[in-house]
Image (cartoon, rainbow, N blue to C red; front, side, top):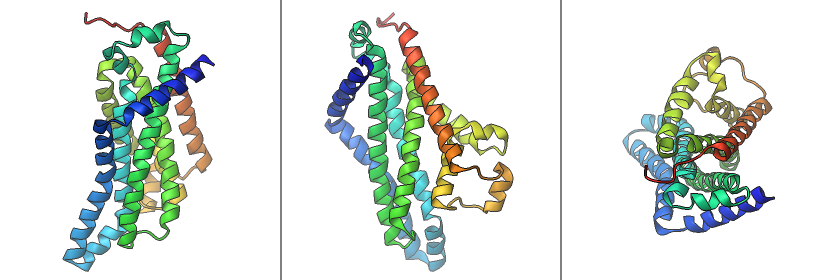
Length: 267
């Protein structure tokens, strides 16, 4: 109960603090970036010739998925990785240590805030992209696309928020840099390799979930993709792997933050 009450209190406090002018401007700027970019590219294509416009409409769904995913990851990096460092820097870590279950409550509360804020920003950005794509005739069923991608980004916020929160308890000051390296090296390069190791990455399971729910939106033939990555699994297996990794990362983060001694002085 101390963990639950403390996590709820942390969540409420961080949500109230997030409504500052600076944080709102950052969130609004990131949320508007994908629809603005999509609109600019589509407008330029439609003013040139019909062939270019047709290619843009064909790959508009993929561009929307990529741009909103980029915003979602940036928000998680900004909110989830500094979970311990912000408390050390704000001189409030000693107060958390002496509270019953204070460390775990802080960890879970900050994780919940990171997931909520990142998903809300991604959802607003996704709605803007769907409206832009629909105005150019790039989507057959915009509401279904919004629901499917909303579910995928919700799963992404859960699993990557847990991974980044775990990294924040281990690396502290360099957690954001390590998180960015993790995204590029593991979830970017490693996930693109046509090998069994790519199936251990979360981006593979999220991509397969999106393909199962939304349909084919990857800009190269499906036969070539299946030749590289193998046949499709049932969607429940991908969702199960994502939830399992989320649980493992959260448990590992709670163990680390509970047992590790953090240096609070400048030395």
